[in-house]
Length: 187
Ligand code: MN
Image 1 (spheres, rainbow, N blue to C red):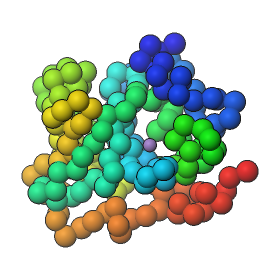
Image 2: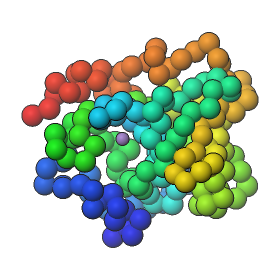
Image 3: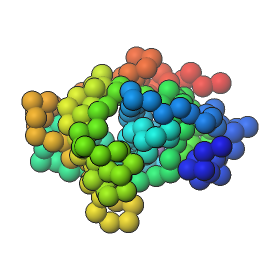
Image 4: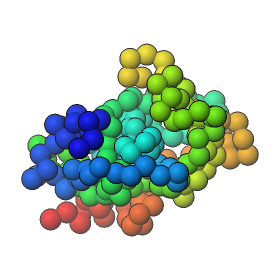
């Protein structure tokens, strides 16, 4: 069992929630990322990056921006299992994080720094190149206080202050469904 997943598991009752419990995953060179739109008590976007064999996770209230001038608050949350990257569905009422979850974007990423991701994470400075369906390009995650980090679009050809993918792209990268359609699909 992954020790870093103990907080994740403690918060959830897997008899009631359809979320994955998480197995011991294999780490790979093809690093995964996912951004899940989560309509919980407050709508937010969960940004998750594979580091080793878990997903490091941040909750971003406003979601990512393609403008290099808009720094987005990203609050560190518990590590999630790798299988969580495919989770889309409804967390039942009364359960932790109750609400609809959409796989808003997914893909692979590259570490832009010449040191392991685990070290970048510990030092509180991450720079990655995302190859997603909605987001591409360099993004930095910079720690500033307690669990608070900032997600910042780096300057490159993918930066674009006129595009707002959070507003303009509202369908799932997994199923093509809207939040309403995912919600309606629950049992
Ligand atoms: Mn969430």
